[in-house]
Length: 185
Image (tube, rainbow, N blue to C red):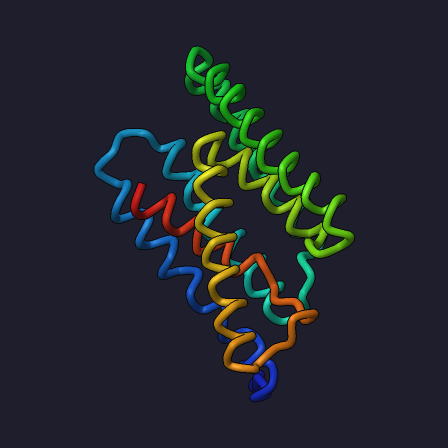
């Protein structure tokens, strides 16, 4: 018996086809460097961040399961780091903890004062991004992501595609910030 994939299922999975290309691009860029842990960290944030952005675009939600996968992958990677190079693992943990606190803390503050103008998934996503990218990386992601989202929102409002009270998913714009940090910085 031959398995067939319906057109609807194929269309639903099509956006995820970009994952191998992102992973390959990071591999090509960072393969020359000897830091395999940095490559692994970038690969994970690229792939998992992409999935979060696609989910946010489709459903305006970032699943808690995805956040747990991000946390679990970071934990495994950190344990490997401790076994491979204990000396640099302590500094990396501090850098990640600062990124987690800043990314999650700033977005939590905005979440609380904006009366749900920002989603809880975005808060958790930025906390996880802080673990992967550290303090300076998460600040850069937040800056680029929110600026690009604000400009896009203004353009959509001026073009009368959305109203002033409408929302747009933020994760795709935050993911653009991740791309800038990984590929440009």
